[in-house]
Length: 114
Image (tube, rainbow, N blue to C red; front, side, top):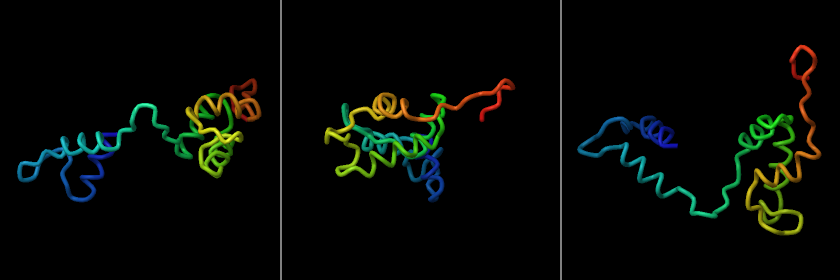
């Protein structure tokens, strides 16, 4: 994450690896991280890409991750289950609810995924 912040600083003309007039942008990046770091127990929903990657990492089709993400993101309120309870762990929820119904990617005899 720090590397991404430094890259953004570089993009906008702030040399992330150096300093300007005594400002160390590496330390600025550290300060930004402290501001955006979630509090313990605070739920941070995944991005669509994280959801798809999680499904792929567990042998499921990435479309299942997108379907799960859309389901919880479109809930009112967002990221609550069908009982109205807030999702505490999206990974656990995906495993418990969506991996049962998701299409597992199968490998044929040649090791190719179909």
